[in-house]
Amino acid sequence: MRILGIDPGIAIVGFGFIDKQGSKCTPVQYGCIETKAHTPEEDRLLYVYEGMVQLIEKYKPDAVALEKLFFNRNVTTAMSVGQARGVLVLAAVQKGLPVAEYTPMQVKQAIVGYGKAEKRQVQEMTRMFLKLKAIPKPDDVADALAVAICHAHSYTLNSKLNEVLRS
Image (cartoon, rainbow, N blue to C red; front, side):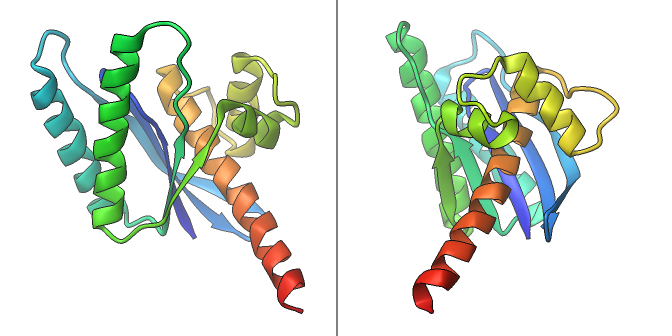
């Protein structure tokens, strides 16, 4: 199963593709889509959308997992990121992909085993899970890979629960 993890943003969209075989997760490709500041928002959204469509077509994931948005201060940033998240979901749904969402706390719980873990702990565990030499930069990329791993763990658990419930 190939999973695309996404950390949504308007300036930087982190993405990470992993392959899950059994309990093993292997990185396929990861990076970010960056838009230029002071560019009209509609142009930035189009760039994010087209970039994601190209990635989906090239790496052909079976599922997409996004980090749920959480903002407590800047409403303007929240609106822009929410719009970027919308075009990312649109790109996935248009390609017929299932989309799952995880809160930052769920991702931390899945990666570190503690829902209030520090960002650095999550990044280091992500690096270790995927046997990477270094933590991917910028942070949005490491976050996207963590979301993909979270989905891999959740998918396995949900599949087993469904099997038990069907018995």
